[in-house]
Length: 266
View (spheres, one colour):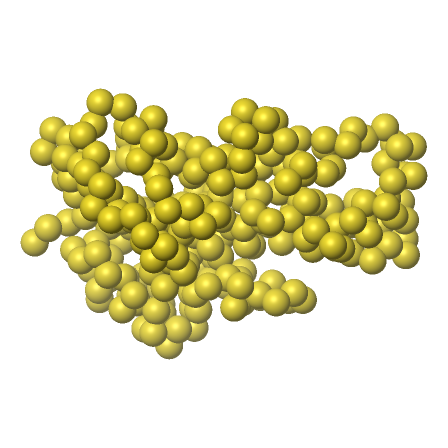
């Protein structure tokens, strides 16, 4: 039986002008690459994992919170019998959950460095992945990423992070881009997928990113509402972000908060 490590990554906050970009990764150990079989048994156990955009439409964070915090508890030594039983039955182990929160000041600095949001997202994501790969010695690792801003070609960024490896381009298309290589007998495969939330490792990463992004927006709105009590909250997306930016401008100036600390350039 071949045991492999499966990594899944996704982001939340790629499009907004306000609030952070959040990139997340989940890591699993399994004897088969398709973990989609876990969606239904987890749901029957009261744990819904899926596309964060479908689970959260504003309002209550309960659906996201349950799906994110139950696996998080396992990683921190707090038993969740129903979740652990489903994983055990399917010979799957959750290894890690990580997220990287990039606030506007850092986002703008990285944007100046990498020239585009897509390149910025790819570098942050690959950095998270490289850290995980260094931590795992298994012979087979499969990396599943939701596509980065519609980008189809990732060979350059992979070559940058994995210099010296002979990386085979298997496929580059709108549906998916696939790359493989073998290093010292260890097999690595990267798949960048359109609508990747159909894969459990990506879906949980999507939920973790969305959950952390929404918590950050709650804090952002609460801060400005302490200074402007009747200010309507924002989700940070372009049109409403312009309204919000205009309404906080006088307080922002009074408090001496730099534009780069509030407003993302793209």
